[in-house]
Image: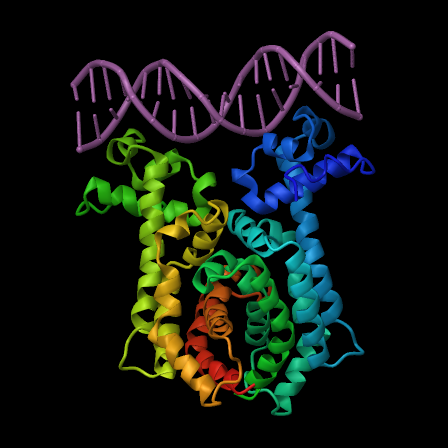
Length: 209
Length: 209
DNA sequence: GTCTATAGGGGGATAGAC
DNA sequence: GTCTATCCCCCTATAGAC
């Protein structure tokens, strides 16, 4: 993969090529470490065009940030609010989709968390996350399981934490984990694929503990 | 907690006060977003003193980074290499110590992972992580469990990933999780304390899945 | 050792030609 | 719409007084 991945994609508009480049660089380095010149170079064009299309680095970033977070949450919200799937089916779907999605852009989780940390939660105010999750079918189904004695842990948030942790954490810690396990990129990917199968089983086992 | 937490600690040397301030600010904002002026202000002193004691922002950062990572790994290495504890005791010890340690400085895991991401693994070369973990008593004990059929998952790294994920992830994602669960600081802390008790049980259950 | 003042450079933004 | 050249502020680092 060349550094200027977009420059040789003549079918994209200039604006789209900037956004693709910005997305890549912001995800890789974060807002503060990214220079507008980096983005221009990655897009294979001049720096002035960024300001022509997006006014400022900050405005460009806000768009990327919003689209990244939205794309990330959307999937989960959809799966979690399907009335026609069981809790375990939701877990399987969520695990499968997220491991695929994150494998395509492995830097996204760390990017989101580091950028949210800085802006002191101001960004989070814009998204109705509380409702989207807490009032989801997923949570209701989990609570039903608790009432029926089929899940020991009474707090749905603990359950959600565990699920997210098992799926997302390996990607956030991948440089460390690769070093510890002396893994090549390919081997790491294989492990993540293997987790698609295992996480639902682990989750099921945890319910009874 | 005042912003200039160190300025009213006359028992510390200037150098120590700078390091305390730098540690706090770097952990909170990361290397790139941190300005030397921020550190000077946090330390309640003049900017020029940073260069007097540490030559440059980068050198100061390297010290903080090293001490942070070392402090973080040391504990785990100790627990994991104790010949006189069982695997489950190691899990309990590790969970207990890390939840306490991270609760005191919750930004550390995210700080480490974001900074490691940028420097392209150059930093990780300095630490013999591969040996420290892969050749640990912990891993040997796990492999024995696998041989005895008491653990289904054959890969020790998958096991380690799960353990770290359950302990560390909630802290890395805390802004998001607090928003989702509509939690105050205190409630979040209570959940983490609760996890000290639960994670060892969950881990035990996962072994059989 | 600690301060004030300032040098020096990098990076975001824009003017203006084409 | 896209480029080159340049402005100007902010940040790191240092000189020099005390």
